Every structure is written in C-alpha cells, then in structure tokens.
Length: 177
Image 1 (spheres, helix red, strand yellow):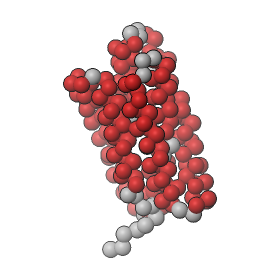
Image 2 (cartoon, helix red, strand yellow):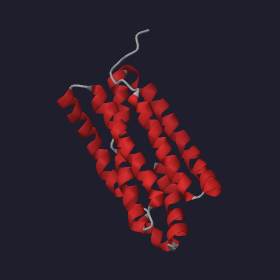
Image 3 (cartoon, helix red, strand yellow):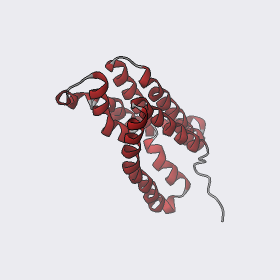
C-alpha cells in the first residue's frame, strides 16, 4: 500500500483525472492524512483490547485482521469511483486502516520472543525493504499490462494475504524446542 500510494498515485491522478503535475503536490498528501492519526492510535487500541479481553491474539492479530480487511475493501472500490474526491477519500480511509496495525507487527515480536527482538526485527525490515523494490516494479508491470485498476486489486490482494497471515499469528506463544 505504502509504495503504491507513494509512487503511483500522482501518475494515476494525472492520467485518470487529467491533473497537471504541478497540482499534484497537494493531492499526493491526502491519502496520508488518516494514516498520521491511526499509526498513533493503533497501539493504544491494541493495548485497550488486551486489557479488555485479556487476549494477545485478539489485541494483536485480531486488530490486524480487521484493519487489513477494511483496507482491502477500500482499495477494491477505488476503480469503481468516477470522482477524484471518491478516489482520494477511499485511498485515505484505506491507508488509515492499513496503518492501524503498524505497531502491532513490532509488538508481536516483543510479546513472543523478547530476547530475539533485534533478530526478528531485522528480518521484518528485510521484507519491508524488499517491498520497496518489488511493489513499485510489480505495480508498473500490472498497470502497463492491465490498467490502473489492477494496481488497486493487487493492493487489496496484498492486504488479504496479510490478513490471512496475521490470522495464524499467535502472539506470546513460544515454540518449545
């Protein structure tokens, strides 16, 4: 989601809604407005869920699953929008949901294996950094071959993959060797 929004939103708005490149400086920030708030709230929501339910799985994995579900829904509806307002609103809401579980990904590592948080944090960063190469490249291939709607479908599929993966995460449960 991050790299799609950073690298392809201006070109999409330019090609689809005939914006001039010079006017995209302010439109490119709109999808990030909600994320600036939800990245701060995600950890608080997760902690509140843990206090209320006593379950790390609900507080960490459950929060991520629900957030990624709404992210996928928002990105699936973007190609159906005919107005730039609708597109930017769905991008902003979808990206806001995408950032809710950001702190959860790191917290799961600490909840599960605090003595190896640095190692697992490095692995997490490895995958994130690989995404900085794969996501814009794959998006370009999809756009060229199938049009802009394919990039939003791919983003929704990525959110669904993350959602399914997080459904299997059991924070705090260590595998005994």
